[in-house]
Image (cartoon, rainbow, N blue to C red; front, side):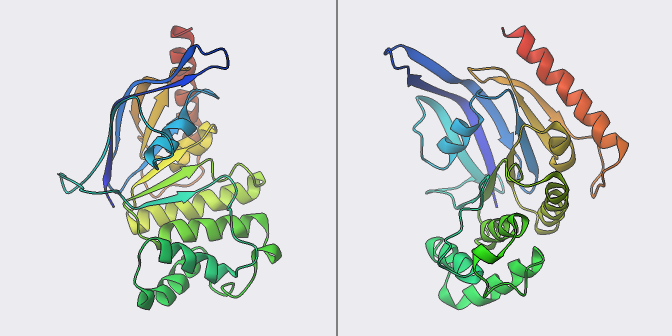
Length: 254
C-alpha cells in the first residue's frame, strides 16, 4: 500500500464548439496510507475524471499524481485495484477464475493464486463460491467478488467508484460494513467516490469535499467518529455536517 499525493492537478476538455472546458482546477490533497479517503462533490464536478487520471486513462494538463510508501516516492507505475459501480466480471469464467485473471494481470506468482483466491473469497463471505459462474450470483454477491478481486492483488491503492450504487439499500449497507471492516483489517489505502453522504460518513477516515466544476478542494475533513463503527445517530449527524460544507462551497462558487 502507498500514500496518494494529488498536487495542483488541472484537466481541460474541449466542448463540441471547440471552446475549452476546465474540469479540475489546481486540485490538491492526499489519501493517507492505510486509510479510507472519501471524495464527495456535486454531480459532474470531475470525480470520475480524477479516478481516470489516477489509473492513467486521462492525461493531466498540469500537476502531479505521485505515490509514496514510508515517506519514499515509488518509482514506476503503481499497482491499483479498482471496484467499479458494476462488478464487470467475465460471465464465461468462474468466480475463482475471475480472481485468477486479475492476479495474473497484476504479476502475482502463479504459486500464490490459489491461496489468495481462497483467502479473499473467504474474507468477503463467498468461500464456497469459487466454482460458481457470475450468472448464478445475486447482485450483492457479484459486487463482493469485485471487492475480493480488487483486494486480492494487494495493490498500492484501491479505487472505489460508487461501488454500492447498483444494489438495494439493505444490500448496500451490508457491503459497506464488509468493506469498512476489511479496510481496517487489511490496512489498505482506499480512495472512495460517492454521492451518498451517509455512506461517506460511515466509510471514511478522511473526506475530500469538492466544489462545482471546475473541481477544487472545498475542504479536507477528518472523520471524528471512532473505528470500528456502527450505524449510530452520529453517522447521520456527521453526514449532515458534510452536507452543509458541500452546499456552502457550491453556493460560494456559483
